[in-house]
Every structure is written in C-alpha cells, then in structure tokens.
Image (cartoon, rainbow, N blue to C red; front, side, top):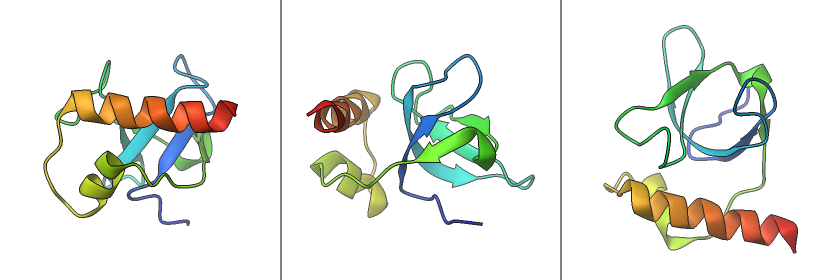
Length: 91
C-alpha cells in the first residue's frame, strides 16, 4: 500500500467525488483520514478507503509544508492551500 500521509488526493467515489482532500492520517481498518477545511475540518476528518481516492502530485504551498512538519494549521489556511493546488491543476 502506498503511503498517503501528507499527500493531496482527489476523491474518485462517493458524494464528494472530484473533491480535493489532504490526508492527515489513517485508522485501524486501513482507511485514510481526509480533510478539506470546509465540510471536513482538521478536527473532524473523513474516513475513506484508499481505492476510492486518486493520488495527486504534491504541492509546495507553505501551508501544506507546515502540515507535513506536524505544525498546527487552521482550516482556513488548508482551504487556501487546496485552492492554490486546484489552480495549479487547471493551468
């Protein structure tokens, strides 16, 4: 299994299909814990099976780097980082 921790993924299944999420960890059943800063904040991540997400190339946004280093980050900063990543994908 690929190590998804600290990566940006796109939901490939479910009601949130196509949405961008940041992987904050995993649980005992092998599911990924995802957050987007809006509907799923860092304090309340969504659990999703790895086969239901698509791994995207990493971002160099400062907010994502802070999360990778283990620093606390607000949901607002995470939303901005994912929006900047989304803009990079569209270019």
